[in-house]
Length: 345
Image (cartoon, rainbow, N blue to C red; front, side, top):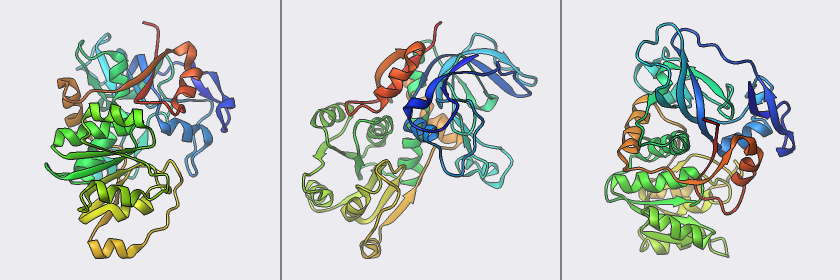
């Protein structure tokens, strides 16, 4: 079985086709014949090698996927071959104390498809039954593949960890990535007033079309805190959603309102940031971290996607034979939304 991935960590030069045995479903497992998969920034980190994360190689990239049920293991009686499905890429053990109280995202054994296991840039993938969700025919495979990782990340970060309430002011740093395009929609669905920050004027206008009320360009002098403070009417933001890290966090902290929350879901510009802690205690603000989502959060998010109230943003589509080109597109400064790879029907 062919897949797109790598045999050795490194840069894009390591990418190519790898061969894996076809997975065989065990008890309570489902094998999905994939029709579409999508890249995430996580794939770049996996390729480079994540400290402390050991993976089997050769390794297939991809966390998101949608397709049809191909085969089921013992104990799976409610799914049949041919049913249209998408997968939840978050894996938990179901037995720890966090899982028992419905906080699967805090599972000590939490893993992600495509990071800790073989990914979705291939013909077939094997996942636990609880990670498989049926989808209607109105929900296309490319859109279904574009949604799971980014929308669950945005959902938990804003609503659970960030405790976003209707009418609050939220600033989303970054406009073009899949998580940002999801976060804009989740925040608007919650009834928040949304400000989006980006280097790109064209991406800001596209963010407006997704529901952003206010647009802020990264200032040339780097004083993002002042730009946000001015845009908020010198009130600050109740919640700031930041995936940039080193470049932005020292400034976005200073744009928080009293009692505001900075929720960090990534660090694309670097993981180490220096902060003035006096800002936090004087404004009684907080910094919170979030990643992925629990089972109930995923199901709530998926219901909104199927209803059409949340819409996956697809930047571009490529056939599996052009997976390397698709991966390169993911690094493009013009990227807006998800890069989807489609498999033969």
